[in-house]
Amino acid sequence: MKTRTLKLENLDDLPPPEVLQQEIIEHQEAALASFRDVAAGLQR
Image (cartoon, rainbow, N blue to C red; front, side, top):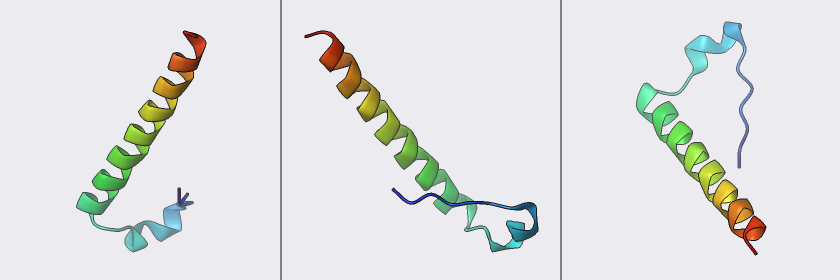
């Protein structure tokens, strides 16, 4: 997973909104999958 540090002076360097949107979706899906793994482990 790639982590990006954003600073206010770098706003012009942001990728297009579609790319940001896709990255957010991918990160949220990965977080949800991790949470499901933890939850499944707790049920055992």
